Image 1 (cartoon, helix red, strand yellow):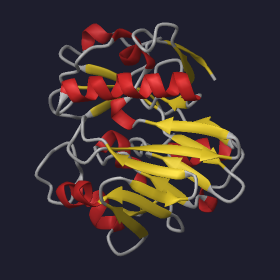
Image 2 (tube, one colour):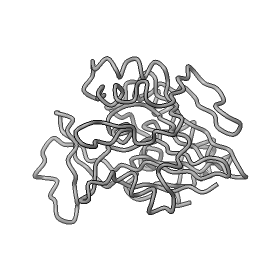
Image 3 (spheres, helix red, strand yellow):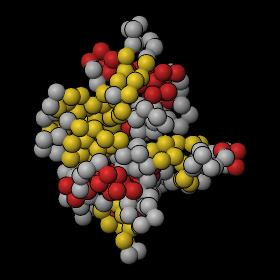
Image 4 (spheres, helix red, strand yellow):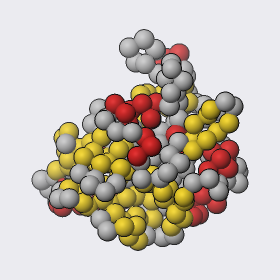
Length: 258
């Protein structure tokens, strides 16, 4: 099993929830008061039988009008058309924007041949358009055009891939456990978004249930340390793919690049 971080760069987002590219080498964070600064890392996993995308980024394009996500997959040595599974932790825009690509003024699926795995409740809420965190036009473009497996609760998708309804960051958030070919990968979405949150142990205001999300992070960190799960940190600035260790029973963690 091979794992690749498909980094889409850094962005600022303010109260309007508009994402603006941020280059720390030339941009000054003081020019964007009240903004949250994030890093975006979808992931690609290659196994013997599958090419798997874990969350899809913002869906931004490069200067050649090419979807960044597609180009990053090609840079890793693969063809986007060969993706077989798209596993979604949740559908907030910074995770679901890359589900579609705009061509000739129309939104089209980015991975038309792939099976998309989404929590049913997350889809049903997102497509209502009741929250600006969700862009319902994305889901409308997918509806009826791609293979979507709507899961409920927790279970096994295929041998070696488990999904777990976690519900800390948002009500229908899920995490994925991939145990294949002698390797283990945990994708925690926005409940294990970056190593710093695991190390510092704090309650984040942007989580629906901040305390639950914090407790889940500690649980995931302990399991990763004890059982050898490689953690995939979607919002990591530096260590997107990391191994977790703890020498005191899970009270304090260290994360090193995998």
